[in-house]
Length: 414
Ligand code: PYC
Image 1 (cartoon, protein in one colour):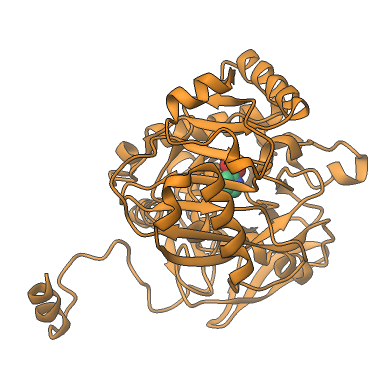
Image 2: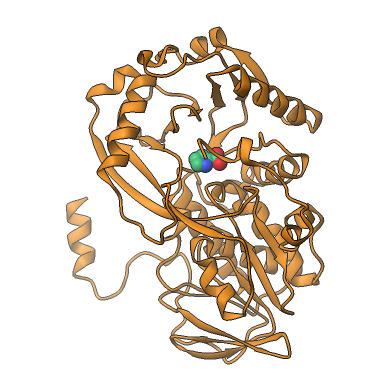
């Protein structure tokens, strides 16, 4: 390996084929400009081409591909939501994910693990029962299980949580819950979109969106002006910057979310485990690391700094649940930005500005929606009609008080 590294370090030409082209310049005009080279933006470019034949598309990314929420989440995929609208939407994503490695011809390390959401109180058992019933009604495999079942599947768990929290009383068990390699998802969609002809421009920042008479006519970028009649904003934690460019008001607020991984261990944790009472979720990656996170940082902030407080409290809770990891070293920690909505559902689709489309409000739940958001946003942009699966997630719902309340299922401890 070092020899190979050295050899290629001194070569002028990059020896391996690149995943996608790196065009030197922007064209003067595109049919669609997608702001944000994360999974959602790249998936939208891919489905615009594949499903709608629209290939004169530029994905503009101010940093590097997958450097935002896509590469900073804990890679959990599931559809055990609380509302029928949420369950249908995320189930379509699970369906797409299950075949995605084959479709994109790239190993995404998609592995079904089974997902436990632990209940430590009668009230949370009730919410789990409610979720299980909604899930089953929509053919999503999900059931309420007791503490004995949890212990059988997770022999290393301390159901008493070290006596520091209320004991585990049961759980919502969702066998199709999965994990995947999140950066690979972005690269695979990038390659797929590129093969159809879409252009991907990294290090290219959109500085303004040009409108005339309420219609999009172009974008200013750090590499010059381009004309376009359609702009899709898919920038997660930076959404308030793009909406400001077109004068659009949303209820989004930004909070950091931190995460952490341990050193790699031999495989021992087959499942994904979530506990709202302990503010904790954990799974073991294919590389053996424990990938773990907590709830949002409490204050609104645009910052990706990690904190010692977070590492200490997350480690404490992890040891409460799995005492055997007490001596495991932490490898690294990081943070990402979450654009939170009042109802914990996304904001997707058309906006009052003609030609400006939004894919936002991804809070702590965006990675799992990558395929379905790409598919439904591509359809909405191509046809100018809101795709039926994202009809409930229109921005206008906040004005009409038609919220899609997912707080009980979106993540942990908010
Ligand atoms: O939505 O499954 C989820 C999730 C896990 C961690 C943060 N959000």
